[in-house]
Image (cartoon, rainbow over the protein chains, first blue to last red):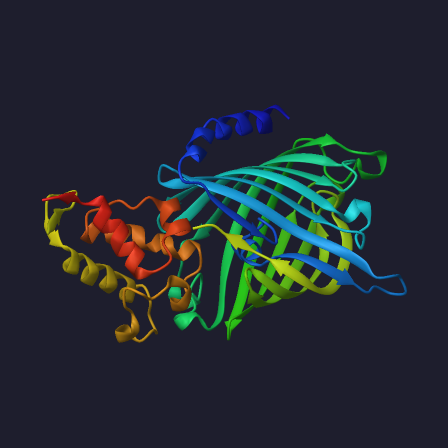
Length: 256
Length: 93
């Protein structure tokens, strides 16, 4: 708890920088750039024999320049009646990233909780990704049409801030996670399909977990899109298994 | 009108434009070089959000200016705006 709190205070010390030219973005999630690039989505879900349900996936991010990088504050929610309370995810983030050619290094403090706030965790994380490698299509698609991707490698140290009895063993207090993430996208004719695949090596009952999240969005104007999205696998904080497909309305904002 | 970069070299706005376009072309293999102009957006070239950071080093080496990285990624959407940013960072000669 102390390590995460101290890191949060250290990063927040740079918060006055947000007074200069912050940019605001609204998207699907802040877990990756492609997820943030996808619209926040309100989706109607037909699942088994149940009545029509909803999901909401949204994130808002405010970022501002600090030194040779930037400071980001964010909040996200993966919620809605289609998700059981323990499968909903709420999060908040403070992130400092820095360009250190040929890579980008990011240090973040992430608060993550389930829908009932029964399980809450704070994670101090370090992530790295190459700035871009055209020959491998990392961060670059010639002419903006076709496939590109971006890998991230990360390490996290976290504390369990609270846990109910059923979740006590998911990760121990003072846990360490290693994770790899691949963001993939395919663009054609203004539409974009994205896939975010994350794998964790974690302690406790979570052990090895993977989570896939995909979306296809077709812009219809004024920031709105028709969005088809799907997700499958296990993700923090509870690492509860889930699988879902849906079609709905999306909205994204990127301030200039 | 001429401006000086951080090493004292003097540039006209046209020279800065040409150098910026040359840098962008080198970072965009597989794209028709003649199609890259001041109006070309980085999204149209196929650059993702983080790829734009690859501009930092050549701009520092060739135009002798340090781009603010977060501003570059959040506010600079096309080649012309990149040229404007570099030009604005230079001082009057």
